[in-house]
Image 1: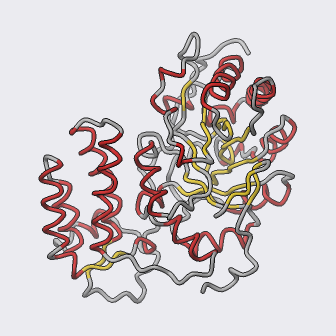
Image 2: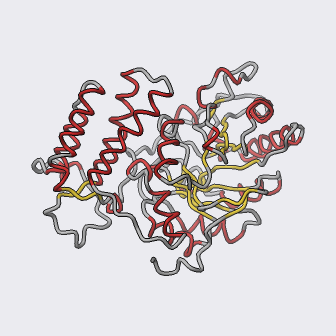
Image 3: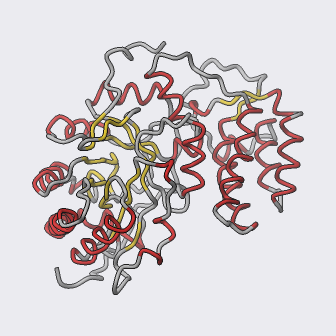
Length: 395
């Protein structure tokens, strides 16, 4: 059993919902759709904390339609489930929130003020709202008012970054606005918009927000293991942790956290067991009606991340934690772990992918260990420039 677990904060409340474990699967566009969320839920033994949709755009629709956004689909077993919306027009955000709440009955609605993508932030949505806090306040005010008029009143939550850049960190102001407008939970990603996903998250700022907040604050950024989740909650006083890229490398992480919080012994995942996850994922992709090409893309997306956690059995485990695998390091010879990755990523069809998977499982995988905790560099390419266009008009 991990040290300090007995007195650890293991749940948080979202209005009347008691959330265990105190985790959230961070929404990631093009990743955390229903098949991936269902995969994580199955692997967790149905102990996922909160789930939330990929973000749903509201700017483009003249009249928001529930049938026009595939991101809105979720399954009953995913509850408690929230739907995250983004946009820069308060009236459109509020109208979309009301239609979603009345038509789909999610457990909460979340406003996105965190997405750093240029196509989002550059048009004043997502983390672009951190450069216009009065607009963010208006969005939260109008959205909360719209939800108050629904048949079933549901909580409003907010996801944000700590600021636009290092010179304009305004997360404390964002917290004050959120609490004043009836937001009931705040998720803080500890990076600025300018950072994108480069570098490491600033948990000191997350801790400052948690210490000042009257509402639950969930921290987001670089959580890749049970030990890391424990340290973040204990050190920074957050109500819980939100996990994104860590779940792409290790979709078992939520169940591992739940096991630890329940005092159960850690389950050691073998390389063979890790490879079997693709069959479960493909089943969910098929049920979602994915084309063969689309399903292959998702299988390879998961393989590229998951296989980075494989370690050659001959390697000394000592000192292997907190390893950042560079492209140069990966190019030095073809290790057994790299051979697995390349074998899967060069498959052309699902049939070929699964034939290769079985061959690897019954062969070279037996010499591998699965240790995703050793990975620190979970992030994408450096992105530190963005032309912020004045693409929106009236408030």
